[in-house]
Length: 88
Image (cartoon, rainbow, N blue to C red):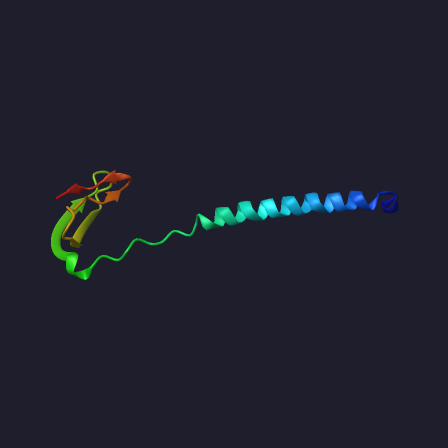
């Protein structure tokens, strides 16, 4: 019967429930905050130079033609089929 419980018991139960709700909220908000990742910065258009580089996947044979790349970095082979593509 509900009237047999003292008011202190109800206050204690509500306090414990509030602590659990707050804990679940903090954990959930922390997990959602980890999804907020800023995208990489856009490259400066002056640093992009035209290139003509072909790559072929050694596993399935798919080919890619790279037409632009960053002037400051060496052209790296893209990945396909979880393997680095082979320059042609």
